Image: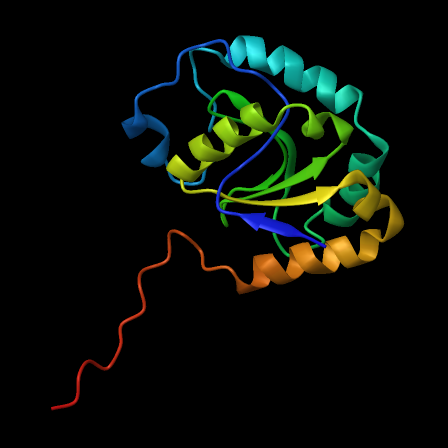
Length: 164
């Protein structure tokens, strides 16, 4: 049912240059994740997407908003030169709801995915049909992934070492 890809996705083609890699990777999971060179252009597109959300996005947002997963989820959030449908910044998780347009923009989606991988995000994708047919199941899968994922800013676990 779900597809998990280490990376990100959304529906906007970047026209601005990508910032140096040192910029976004070093940021803590704060809410400012956009490329400052293209932010003003992408913000206008993001604002339109927020006003004109799809039926599937509306349905799943009811399950995700107000920390119903235990984590703050943002919708239509700008990361670098792209807009993620939904994002949990502390867990570096992006949730994409794919409509029919994604069948025709596979190259673009792959390029976005690669950029999100570079930025250390994980992406999970659901189709519009999955969300419409069984939103509770989609929510449970998202919730499980959030609960089982390691916080990217937590210190590594230390083992007992080798017994000699």
